Length: 254
Image 1 (cartoon, helix red, strand yellow):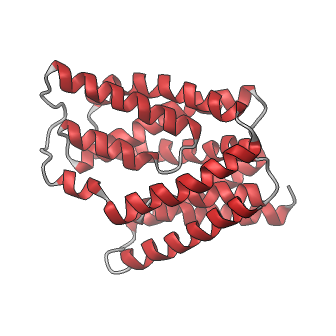
Image 2 (cartoon, rainbow, N blue to C red; image 1 turned 120 degrees about the horizontal axis):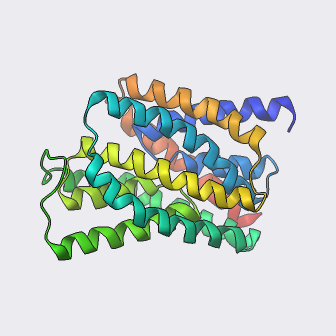
């Protein structure tokens, strides 16, 4: 890639890292941009994981220092998520490039609409309690494990928007939103390692582009974490929604 494309990726990563904190769905921005810059869709999908991996390493360190990390619960749900991610990532590497573009476009619109406007995470958060390990019976634990397996499949396949599903599953289990975010960071970090390994084994990672993106996403995530976004949150959500719809239409029509 020429230097101007790498600089553009870092800038896009900065924006995506920021909106991941204030609105969510940053990968719905970075994935289409990687495709539009010339990467095959499957390679763009693999390359996008590099930025996600590095951003979440720093985020996990932050949650650990804040001492709000529910390690026991996280370790119980990460295994089914990894199993699902391996399945989803392998599916993403064998699906046709055109089919993946269409699937991505559809998911962009559907998941963005759910996360930004229906947003059941906020409703679930009101019923959660402050605890590091929920007291669940066998059936609810089985449901939680199954949900994380399905989440892993989705995350391995496309990644974008997976944090919303993880938060929903965690809140349904009884953890509060703060600990839910910590679980989200940990689960995404671990299954991304395995999913990235699948894409690497297929030669579907552009490290130069991925590291350029990672520089931006890491810095953007830090800025988003310290920014005061209460007044501007609705504007950011609307702006991101319009941008995602435009990208989705372009993916469908090209």
